[in-house]
Structure formats: structure tokens, C-alpha cells
Image (tube, rainbow, N blue to C red; front, side, top):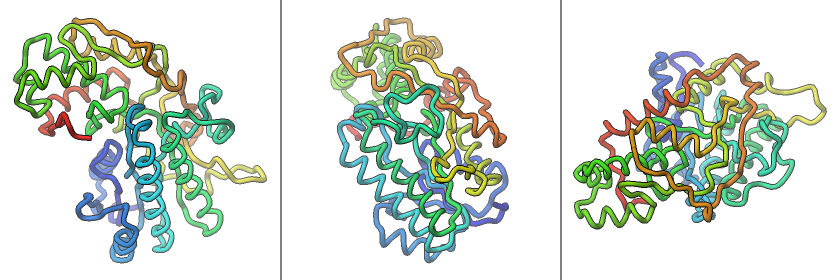
Length: 356
């Protein structure tokens, strides 16, 4: 890529896409294309076809996706598999038809088997069954990755897939019904801190409602009280976390420096050409919760509800392939959470209590 290359960021308002957009802007790229859902519905095949035929896009960051935590993944199973398949099918296929020079497809480490050896390297893909709660989402992402690989092999495209570990950061999804574990914990503990400080004005502002009793009832549904916070599972499950700005920097690095041919091994079968993006460092959910508790300054109790699911107990990536290619993360977990909390406190974005 050069600074004037025409670059499309699909999903530019999301956790990853917004960070990629910022990274590109900070590095001086000045021909960036991005559309919100009203301007371009990525689920609409004809709309995507028309967009690519009109815009003459050279490079694509495919960061658009329907994402969520355990509750959302398990509840909206049909939505997760349909919407993700539809978005990636449209963008990847019309990138090929319109001769896009390079595409970066973002997946997720949930593509790896539930019982994968730890840390997970790229070779363990499809070696055993997936975690049930996020199976539809994982299958969609595997399909997208294999679609990129297959188009490369049949049509000589230059489509690269990356598998980021659990991400967090500015512009994250803080909706208590659909968010991932880190933003969910951060918001729950932050709201409990406001309750413990009797700061109901900020609680109502955060929830964007006006009735105090309604607010308290809503928070209690998620185990949020002035003196304690309920957390799903035993707290023993371990997770790896990567700050979204580090993730964005890795994506831009790959687009600037790596091509599909660089990822082909000398094996007879060309597969597993994707790249893990992670830190190679994990923490337990309990350790994470207590770290957030300390950062937020909440003095109450953390209650771990063992009647709720833990999900996969260990999920740690092996990022050695990316390290050998020349990139490593920079932001520590504590630094990232502090930055995320500061952004959340200052953000004017409203998180409506009844918004899915």
C-alpha cells in the first residue's frame, strides 16, 4: 500500500475497524473509504456489488462482523451464522471480481477446537469439535478464512486471514446483554462503583433512563449491586487479551509487509495460512475481575456464580508466526484497561438499557 491507495475499511465504527481507521490516518493514508450501515448494507449483495464496481477499491480491511459474548452467541445463533456469512461472502467475492490487490479478513480465535492444545498455533484448526456456545459464529469465521484461502489458490488473489485473540479497547461494545467478558466486567464494576458512591445521576446517565427504581431493577438482573457484582462462572477460565490499537497496528503491518505467498509452507497441502494475532499471555477471569476492581476503585464483593457457564477453560494463542514476521504487541493489560476506562468515562455515546 502507498499513502494514496484507495482503501476500504468495512466495519469502521467497530472495536477493530475504528482502530484500523485511526492507525491508517495517523500513518498518513489519505484515500480511505468507509460507509455506515445506512450508506452501505453489507448484507445486501446487490448493494455491495454496486459499491465495488463504482469505487475501484485497491485494498480492503474486512472488520465488519456481528459479534458478542457467550450470552449473545448462544441466544442469537441463527443471526450470528447468517449475518457473518452474508457479509464476508459479499465482500470477499466482489473484491475478487473487481481485482482488489489485497484483502485482510479478520476472524477470531474461537475458530479453534474446544480442546485444542495450549497455546494454540495455526495448525490445530479443524482438528476436533468447537465450543458449543459460539459454534455458529466460529463456523462462519472458518468459512471466511477458507474462502480467502480458496480464492487465493484458484484465482491467485492476495487475501490474508488473521485470527485475533480476545480484543478490548476504545469503541468496544458495552451492552450488558451482548458484550464480551472484559467490557462487560468493566461496565458492571464501574456501575457498582457509582451505586456504592450513591451517584445515581451518573447511573441514570449511563443507562440513559430517568427512573431510579427501573435502573436498579435492570442492574440487579445483571447482578450489579452497590456492595457486590455477580460474575458468570467459576472465574477459573483463562483468557488472553489484546488492546484494539495494538491489533490495528498488526493489521496495517501485515497489509504493508506480508503477502499470501509469504505464508505458504513447503507442505504438499496448502492450508492453515492464517496468522494468529495475540500476546501469548493469559489471565484467569478472576484475576481480570480483581484487576478491573482495583482500577475502578470498587470496594465491594465479587461473587462468582458457578451455576453459569465458564466457556472454554483455556484459550491462549501462539503468536510466534507473527513474531517471526516482525510484529509484537506493545500495550500491557493494565495500561489498556486504564485507557479503556478513561475513554468510557468521557465518551458521549449512550448505552441504552434496552438496546440489543
